Image (tube, rainbow, N blue to C red; front, top):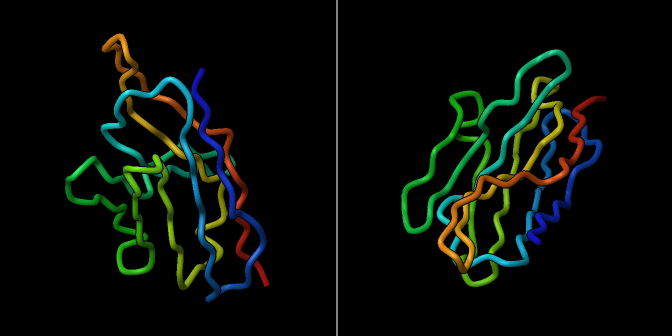
Length: 120
């Protein structure tokens, strides 16, 4: 059983900041990549930022320069620092992990999601 526990969502005013955190636990041998996706009402879920193990980060164009993703491989955690938030950033943000278990099987796993609302 694997769990991705997210925290840090909420309501913030335009121009404000939030930090999302995600912790993975359970039968995980190795996590290849972790990332954050978001879904706004009536739209598809899209990549916000991703960070592979030991590799370079990847950001959506709309968040470059404002969001920063970081990862702690020892703790199996990934954080998303979001600055200069605007109403277009309002969405449900979900943590994602691509990992292998101790039997060598690979999985793509999602957290429950956390709501981020940017509004005055």
